[in-house]
Image (cartoon, rainbow, N blue to C red):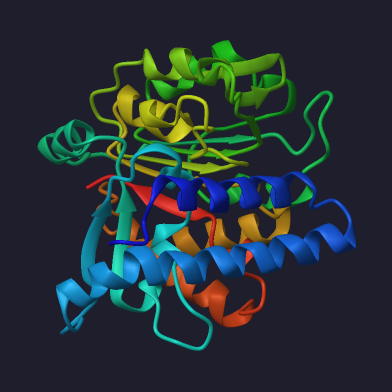
Length: 303
């Protein structure tokens, strides 16, 4: 991969982060759309396309690929790489990201859950944050207890996670590029931080779906340490995690989550999660082809 150099990765990451930061206006949204499209094409030419060529034709089904990008490359959507109008990663691969080979080994070695006990945490309104009207639609996606509003305190969520094997979060999240450990899920009484989540030891945890902004964003200052919400939930014991590389559109996030759970059966294991998320993303891409910023951020992590 002769073109995959640190300077080139840094250039693309810098452009993407700047576009995300300035996406509030119409002009900013257009810049973000163009930037994501350019990043996807560059990723295909320099990194993902060569991997696809080495794997050969995808037959009878897509290749199964685990990505373990180092440094700032982990902030880019390898799983969605494509050049416009041509076959791309989503067409030939089922992709997952892993924070380390050890994390993948541990997730594979843990037995799948034998029971499905769901927990849903929904905050359509969070003190000091913009409302998330689409989040309310996610409250009924899973059977089981739902924590909403003033119930969504760090203590209540941590206690409820102890009994849950599947967990869905529809809320705000925050990442801190200067101190990644200070990032976390924004709840009614403050932030549930990465160390608090990663400090859990959940023996039957199966799936955590983080329908929140930038939950797979580890920032650039400590990029090699892969500290973000998705890795924290892995450390807590969840075998499968669905997260996002950048802020999610509220409406698209709700539709994606609904399609994801509809496609999964009622089994306690979530082993089809990676292929299911790919199918959901392919459907979003077909309907939002010219808006890659909307369909490219969701990623799967796990076995």
